[in-house]
Image 1 (tube, rainbow, N blue to C red):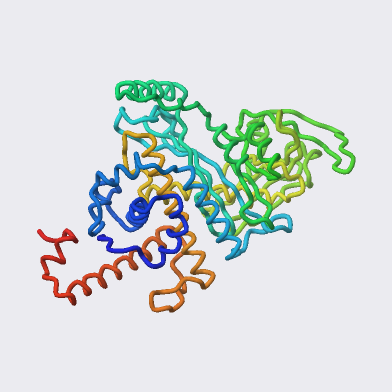
Image 2: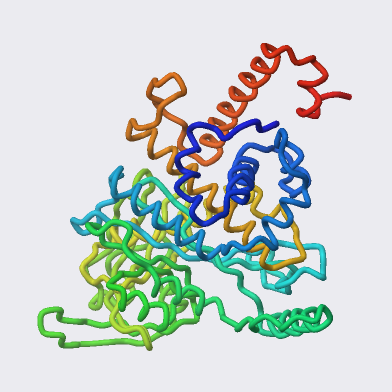
Length: 466
């Protein structure tokens, strides 16, 4: 879709981020974000720049995203400040857990298959979706969820130690060949290092909310939980089958451990009998359960059954373990899974409610890939790749802010009428923005015709001539 101007609904949101850029860069930034949102084709630099009327060519966009003097980290910091201000101003209602309004900081990683073996930072990574190793980039991301709104929060590239060494050597060699001093070498940081650093840098976006850190079983380790505890954050995760857990008969008032048993989580799950046979007497270690028998509860429109234990994980400390399975709509029961949290005061239903919020980061990845071109742009430069990722996730956050503004009655049409809704999903909000871009295009064509421009002169910039 040809873009002729900054869409009025997006203009104030983009303007709040202009401080990161110089004057020429600001225009590139506006057009880049709008192209990620509005275009339907593959978001390459050539394709996106070619749809901006009277815009620069692809080489200018290449310099903007790979070599221009702006920092993705500073833009991310500016975005988080803007997000904090908007959330504190608009005050979306949060999920209530243990009697308190609750937000969630969610971390996960995603792989981006690549085809060019000269790409900086790309390497061979294990992909859970295929169960095999594939070549590409790996990105560790963070999402912030408040109520029904999920915002991109952070993104960092994970580069294997072997690939970091090769990248540093290549950059140093290129600098020497150009007669320049080599850049500072990149330090290797494991995925856990990236998550721990993000947790340590986290500042509450809403001071009146408790926050849970949500991670999958791969990221559940002493370093991650210590980082959350140091920031005053709770956490929840799931447990791998090979992790050992010590179940405790624990008196909370005195701290006395009256009985205990240590076993792998997989063995605990195996001891849960098939649903049709399950009775209170069939529960494993019933004397250690927080409440007698199985608990049946509903989270949203989903039905669950489970049992809660108090326990201890090596290196992590006291936890609550909830062994649970879901009653599917076709009448079957899902396999048993074990969830864990540091909050011993939650009910089993609340633990499940909290952990289910982790799915929001999976939706974030899907939306960024399918709707915002996260993986479309393939550049040799790792710096350019990271900047593209940053801009793609930023566009997701801006769309969610548009949705929040509309839901709070603050979004207006060009005529001044309130916008009742822009949709709920990223795809729906994106479609609404595309309609606004089409309106601007129609107005531009009419203005050109009213100014006496010939048809060819109008259609030429739009690239609509045969």
